[in-house]
Image 1: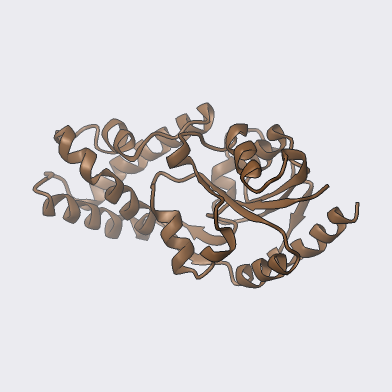
Image 2: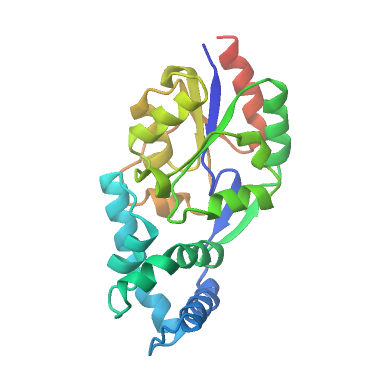
Length: 252
């Protein structure tokens, strides 16, 4: 029986992209925030972001390979700000705000045009909806759902890797999220934009089906994980193809 459908956030419900033009504004905001908290780094935003990008790739590979997410403090102390002497107590206090600034400025984000209509159609089908998102911030996804005007569709089931400590494709976060919607894994469907995290994670958890839509970050996220020839049960060009898939699964 099909009981619930869960979504990835970045690249799925929202469009996400990163361009080199994001770097200097992002670095400028982070350095200004640190300066406001009496942390002066003798480095310009361009060099700072080159350093951060390298650390970001290193951390994200570690997290994906180990299915783990560190806390904002651990990420910024062990990776992004590892080369700078910042007091532990101060960094513990401001780390989440640094993570939020990063998520808002390193990436360009906007809601997918068809997302509101999709969610309304699924609501009319009385399907419980949830979100499972890999994120290094404790607050950004929640804020984003509110800012996009779609938070009301996911009441009670928003699973963040930053809170649980586990990243996709680890299966545990998929299993627990489905349970919160009153479903066993084999009664749930997952929608995401990557094979390496979303499709593999949902399948490892035993989900009924996987649906994938491509995003600007898909190729980079899947790079190095040997996903050639591997695909979701359903690949869609638009989120508005999902209600028909849902109906077919309910009638199976």
